[in-house]
Image (cartoon, rainbow, N blue to C red; front, top):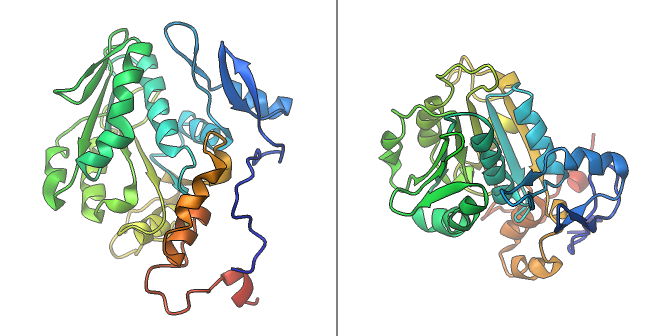
Length: 298
């Protein structure tokens, strides 16, 4: 690639361009924007644990997710782009927020297969639950929040028809981790299992995180980014109900900048997708150096 992108990430606030700094917030060291306005926007969404110590402080892009959810404007929100932008931790923490806030709140967190579910979420959930006054059940794959009666259920959809286990559910929030790995039918069939219960302070929500390159990437592109799916297949699609927020590696200063050395060993197409979130390149592409910024003129 001959553009001016930096392979090594430089962690800066996307709102003001300032380099992130570390400071103590509620007894814990956290990355923050040094600009007062940006910091105040961050700190509004902090989560403290039952010991009054900082549990989670969202970085700016994840603040934007928090704001979008709180607006009650959208029925489906997708956070997508580079690998290691902090998506999994951020969206899981957002779910915790509402489980602690809304009585009898019910959430479902899905990954396509069980190993991914275990490695990316459940092994952390077992440690996080006690800090939040909740109990983790390994047998049920369930977190129960005692103060509110809320629950967070973990599940997976390895077989194409595994969606059948979830379509009868009645939950407030569904999260698809790595949405691009699911099938379109799984997403379509499971999504209506949220939003049937009317609440004054909540609307049923589908949350998704994704990286470009999986089987459902083009669907994500059409549904959340271009907002122009096939009208024949989706005659009642509402673009105003869908929202996309782009995530970049630069958004997450908790990531070691040397992480890109691991991405360097991937194929060229996957390097471009996972490091720079590109959606116009794929495995087996004939013109592997295609870049619309360079090769398309107005």
